[in-house]
Length: 472
Image (cartoon, rainbow, N blue to C red; front, side, top):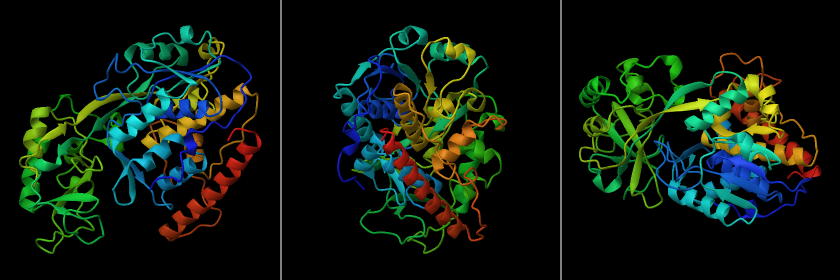
């Protein structure tokens, strides 16, 4: 699914009105996208990334834009909210979307990437760009690095360092909110028992010769019952029982889901719907799906198995899964605390921090990515792209057009910056926040297609407006 050319790396020549660089803090998805977007508009960038000098509990490499949870960027179906967002990235010439397509691995209707190849390519693009100056150091004084900057984009993500988070709290003037997030384990392919596993995507026929997008581990009822019993009784890294409000629903640990009810995983992560075990010709009682982590299919991610279990317990209990009895773990699942700001009270539609404390910096401070609560990989990329466009407009003293609420990101941006949004929590793009259709359509499939068609038209007009202003 590669794009026709590497246009995402070519300068487009937006003339900035000052010579000072834009400081981007954080080399994750949002920060990397923002840096590359600014550079191709002929704007110099000073990019700060604390790794590898200072590591986090979940990052494993020194690369920019490293994916730490799943390697999936979700659905590519045009009639899905996630698919709409990807279409917008393509129309807006996203650099990271180009790299994701270039390094995609098979994942059915989803866009999944070889995470190391993806991050390595982005790192090379950043380090070889003459307009991007990289500093591998931890930032603990925003005011200091902003002295000779024209603007600052803060994109340090949910794992913002304690020092920087403490200073950000001074700029926001309010307490940060936080939720717990979790990453799923990865197992080595050559340690799996393919006599018990089968290759099949949901609602498709089983395949031969181990060719297909998903590996499936089928449970009998007895195997499932024994697995769930051990899962809920296992030792956890964080011993307390989590309250629901502390967990982001899309990344709840599998053991927490199981605590809600013995069959809860069977109607969620372990649902067998649309799958047929070729050995029995029947739907299994429950199924764990494994998704390839790389093009060579040397390792697999346990889909939906984010966990807070200790490493020893993960090895013991996940080896109870049929076909994983001798699994070797390339990475155990981890639990970590995510930090984000109360965007509806702090950010405007340009993602600029609008507080009295922030105004004392003397230059605008923008917040991009998951730190602003736009939860999700693709959402973070789009947020970084949006921040770059807004910074470019600020430097050129241009008023940007509003992102239509009928676009996927426009809906997310409206939700995240609406002062009326109460009890703000991180949000993925979804049809629940997109502007309703003028005419009600009962059929869900037709309704979603209508959303996608309307969003595509709105995005095309939005891009035309940006082009007229010289911002795209």
